[in-house]
Length: 138
Image 1: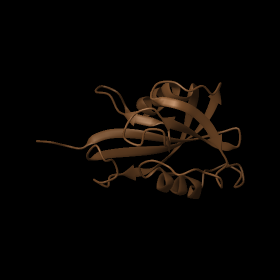
Image 2 (image 1 turned 135 degrees about the vertical axis):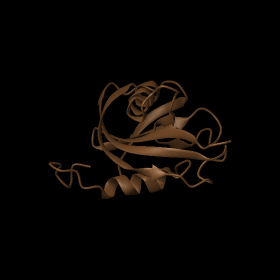
Image 3 (image 1 turned 60 degrees about the vertical axis):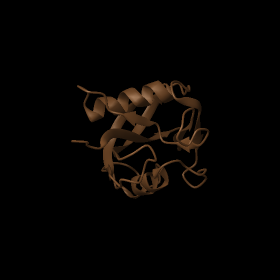
Image 4 (image 1 turned 180 degrees about the vertical axis):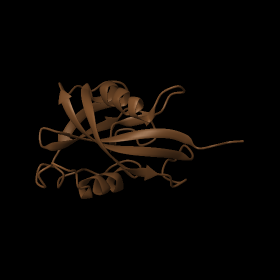
């Protein structure tokens, strides 16, 4: 029986912006995307989000909220991939790593074209109400 693959994505707020990577691999090679990737066997989705953020951006992250579960079978051209997307706050030194040509910070109102359904994920993340967070923080 074939089942969907499981992935994580992180909308990371850092220095008043959103962290995006430029993808080094297909699909969408050279395009901007959220940091993320596949969950490894034996790994929690939360641990996968931390690992992928560290590997691709050099940042340690604090997970603030689950943005949503994205399961459209057409969201990834490689096949059916279900992604759990998190809202996170980053800390550390921004540095591109595995699977990333570069890593950059963008203002929420100045985002480039994005791979996959990452524009939808960011829109959903920006609508979240986080207790204790000033509404203009990010």
